[in-house]
Image (cartoon, rainbow, N blue to C red):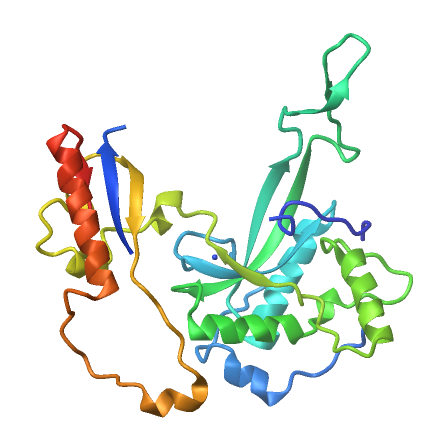
Amino acid sequence: MSGRSGLGWWALGAAACCLCGVAAEPGVAAPPLWKQLAPRKKVSADPQGDYQLSEDHGPWLIMATSFDGPEGERDARDLTLELRENFNLPAYTYSHTFKLDDGRPGRGIDEYGAPIKRRYRRGAEVLQHAVLIGDFPSIDDPQAQETLELVKTIRPASLEVTEGETSTQSLAAVRQFYQQVKRQWGQAIKGPMGHAFMVSNPLLPSDYFAPRGVDADIAKMNEGIKHSLLDCKGRYSVRVATFRGRTSLKEAQHMDQIDTRVRAAAESDPLVTAARKAHDLTVALRSRGWEAYE
């Protein structure tokens, strides 16, 4: 295998008035709990199967690890099959080229007075092969979080490295260093995928994750407001003032004395006063020709 290295994936969550405009640890056997956390449905693990990531493999996935180097693609494939066969995890592979030369100048100037151009020792681009685990509907999905904790602890045989061997796993040398430090301090050591994290499906368009429409609670709070910002036809607005209510904290020992009954808001309530001030300012600005909203 080639030397350990890594880039890319690991370098990879009141009332107001506005103006609107149009503008190498030994492998261990998996305990039964792992199988309880893993998806119940048996996933396929065909050595000849196609497990390349697609748009249908969930909007959210677990970024387990990545590989680079000449043998990175093979190692990513081996880990994908092992996660499927031994841990019943729906793993996929995804390859991506990271362009390191982004054209931005470095600090200083050369002997001709031109900005210094940065150069990378590893060339202008790096091809990495990621192993991801799906198929999760949201980033806070309970099954996703349980599986994420599982992935951080398991020790697949394909990631075990004996003394004297090298690995194509990205940042493997860095993780090995931190494991040695933790071992010296007597801290718990995670598995070779201990830095796994949740990621969105890179094959989905960016607008897939953009909010759609107005939140139901926000819409309800703005019902009946004559000049609500929700009625603004422009794409941008300028906030010119903010009016807030008042908050207070109750000590924990007196929680049983707090009145949780819903009551009608009084005219003297700070939040009611804030809403009135926002409305008055909106009306005043409109009277002077400004397209103001609250």
